[in-house]
Image (cartoon, rainbow, N blue to C red):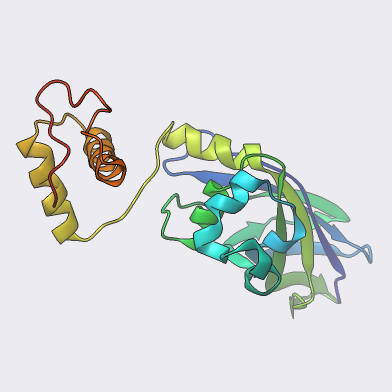
Length: 233
């Protein structure tokens, strides 16, 4: 029976990918000297947020995910990042293979919200492996499962995730809303001749801040131009 050992040598942003994609460099070692014909490999990747420290700004951004910091011992749990597959070609002793991991920047997905909230440092990841190993023994094909205990840990730099996002969405983020909310935003945007969705949200935030402070939108001097941010949806 083949004895496989897995490790991760690094991660980077996949170049020229159509969607945001992480590229993990896996090292697969066969410890008994047997030749491996191929491996149908599956990998489940989990984020282990309890294995790193957080700044005050990061804790504030992660509040809606984990709650108050005094409860983090109970609320901070592993987060699923992805489950992907790859075919490992024939090798003896050791080989390296790239594992492509498509990523989402949807901030309603727990992994996206978590990663968006980090400034720097590393992201503790746990890679859990399963699948099927194909070898040749006594002139015949031998098929073996990969033990469920096969795993590897890797601390991915936050900068790698930021590179992935900035490659496709520089200085941007994605938010999902209902059609009713989108229709209301569209009406607000059109009525005030706002040029972009970013300007539309900024106008709504300015109007809300003005109501909270009792000041006219735009500050103590009132608004400028024709934009009225005091309306409601």
